[in-house]
Each structure stands twice: as structure tokens, then as C-alpha cells.
Length: 137
Image (cartoon, rainbow, N blue to C red; front, side, top):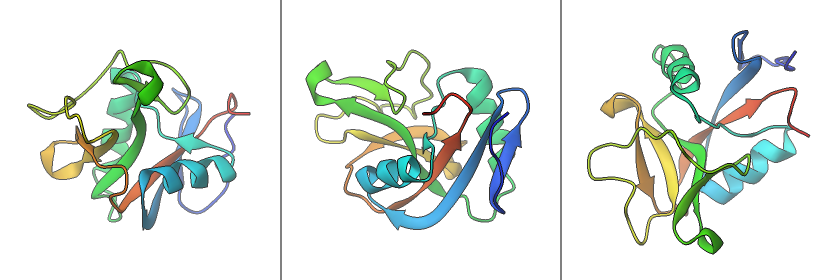
């Protein structure tokens, strides 16, 4: 079972994971390292089921707005989006016209657009979501 101890962690028994919305606004790289330092990773919405869990769980959250998720373009992968767990993105939920920028390499989930995704410069300062599962080493 995922370790969901902590006041701001929300457990999903279906995915055996928990998430935590972090209210600090930092760039994508610092968000990624912060999640890793806390024993997790930036959230991986790699399936419609996981995305629906995030969306349903976070719709009522007062701290939710636009948050970094664990998806970014790997420079060595020739512009392919890779999740923070190292897997290639096969499920995506882009806003219309997004996910194709040559200058925006990190991804945010946007509440005001039905939690759809937008690519953004990685240095932008946003809140972020960490994920904790038993599989994260």
C-alpha cells in the first residue's frame, strides 16, 4: 500500500497511490526534484483512469489551479514527451493546439480548461502535484 501519511495526501485504492498538491510555486525542474526528495515523483497521468482520478479528486480542492505534472520533452528523445517514471506518453489530454511547441518543454494541467494539458516553458513558476506509490524507489 502507498504511504499516504501526511495531511495533504489523498489516497486512491484503485491505483494504490496517493497524490499531494504542493502549494509552493516553483519551476518544473525544482518541482521534479522536490517530489523525488519527498519519496515520490511528479504525477504520472499515463492513462485515462489515472487522469480521471486526478480530475475527480482535485475538482473540489481549494489549492488547485494550474499545476505541473510529470510530463516533459526529453531532448535526447527528439521531442517525444516522457513521463517522470521514464515511460513514453501514450495517453495525452492536450488543450486544442497544444503539445507541439518548439520552445515549451514541460506540461501543466489547467483547471480552467477542464484539466486539459498545456505545454509551458519549464522555468515558469507553478504549483505541482507529487505522486507516491509502492513502486517508487
